[in-house]
Length: 187
Image (tube, rainbow, N blue to C red; front, side, top):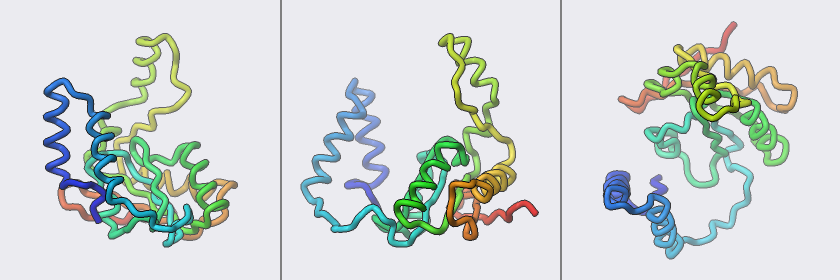
């Protein structure tokens, strides 16, 4: 299912052209929303995901999760951040997803060629020197996606706030083939 009024190539081309011409990307997005809204019909669903699943994934723009997983609007909760790392805020979102909105399964997705593999925790120190304040968050950089998926699965499994930790699976998405590779949890 495509969630765009245009093909990804058309959107990229028109947005990139607008930026080159001095336009604002946000203006393009608002214009696209206006077009989208003209054909929009309330699907009549609530916030509870039909498939009772929450997906935690990287924010990388190359991951079209709905298309890659065959999902439709309303099927899942999608939580995205840099690296798809399970942080305190991800646990917060998963807790609300489970306790208030009925999800039971959790899918964790990292990917090949992630930007977090090319930076280090020194990024925080650089920021502190630049702006005069140390970020309160960790970068959560990693060099081994498989191991980081295992660590994320363990963080979910051991969280005291989550009701359902029996159906947690982790994957690495290959950005060149589009295939998922399952990662087995640490023994």
